[in-house]
Image 1 (cartoon, rainbow, N blue to C red):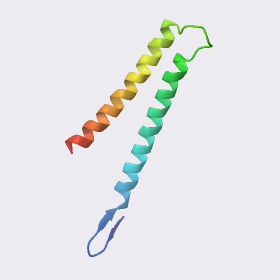
Image 2: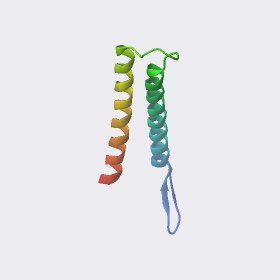
Image 3: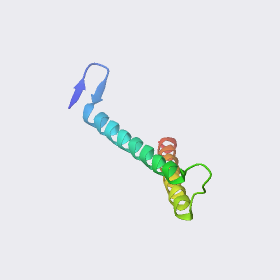
Length: 77
């Protein structure tokens, strides 16, 4: 649905789509980061095992890739 006046045309469907995708990606990055932090979390005085560190690194790497790709999309356009 487009609302047209003399000066402004707003494509509400496209605006809603952008909002939905942005919201979904933001929630996904937050969840990935939380999994990474929880993989590193251990009781005081104990060390994180290799599986926990590997999972944390993968989660943080995925977050970095999503953020980097987002910046790339903004910079190219």
